[in-house]
Image (cartoon, rainbow, N blue to C red; front, top):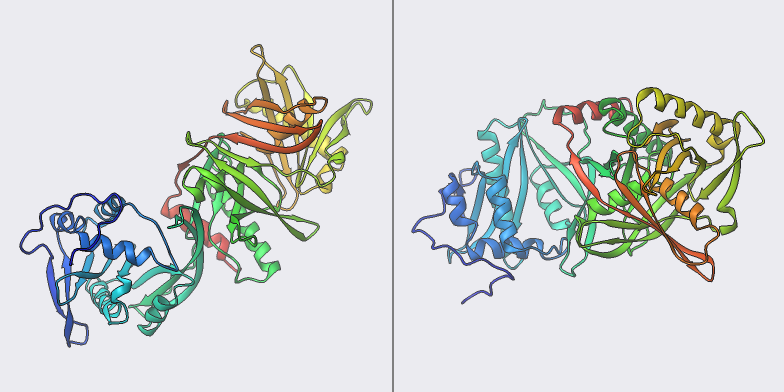
Length: 513
């Protein structure tokens, strides 16, 4: 019986007479196995296997059904296995018709055998294939002198969790969020939980952060943490956010992290994910980074949730986003419910007769100071110190460090080309950080709102950031009234945290937590 080929399936290569690697005839108890299990031991065997129809069908059916419901291109699957498992740590399990009904793939990392893939064709499940594969994985890990076997699985994958626990795996208590393209054509997010099987019973690994990404929205270094702290009560969770923020900044420094956001499950079912900043403030650049990371730049529109914290009270808001084909990401910005509160004023720190315009957003407010003497690009140290001190005094004298989750001072000018140049300084109340920011989405919004104040129609403003990247803000108006605000620009994930750095950060986070 011929199986239907998956969409975009590549033409299979001819299968050699015996491409299946070394057969493993007995399980770890020495009993004869009712399945044919084979371990691939060379790259050539992997090349031959990864294009076989039944291999790809097994993988696609296994992860294409609930709780994953993921959508794949066949060539992507082949490429993943070729790239990640060249050392040959792949097992296949076949039925009496010599068809692959399951597969497993893993590799050694720091003395631990990491099981990345376990797939059994749903039509062939409940026949013992998964248990047989796991039995062989345990045996292989012992042969490699692994201290333990670790894996992660969807928290709703009850069948797999039951199997793992029956074999002696235990939850580590660690969870992360991950996103994937689903069979409905949408990017969706789910939780993955980590499990561990101890081989060396004296092995006591330290708890660690599993998924931290360094993003660059307009050159603004932003860390996004996908690790979950939902097992902690509210007060301890808040402390965990702050400790993670402090540890990342201590280990990586301002040049690599200016702000830290945490991605958590949304309450609104239409939202892709929820962003909670370490200080509970609103951050447009972190919001765009979250969209880039969780959509993997898949073009389309959707909704994203933000969690704000003010006076120890949490509130969630749902905003729109769009990912464009050129890779730019646009997000809706938060405004106060009472639009009359958007425009306000602040006094100069030295001459109280001088008043500056203040723009109030939901979760952050900015004072705008026009200064034709400011430099373009990243400020030199002496100039940065001068403007930092000025900004600090204005925030203190106007009580802005206490009146809002975050407050900024924007020094701005028009250059000879008519471009709007901005130098932003932002204070976050909850975590007491005060940064000269290399780019600022909310600051860009504040300048656009100022420009659009007396205009009747929609206004677009391109603002050149200290990094010289441009962020565009659109102020939509209907009948002279603001109807929406969006910011748009490019986001990149261009920096990586080393294994050693992550270990140091994790130690700070989980020490005495």
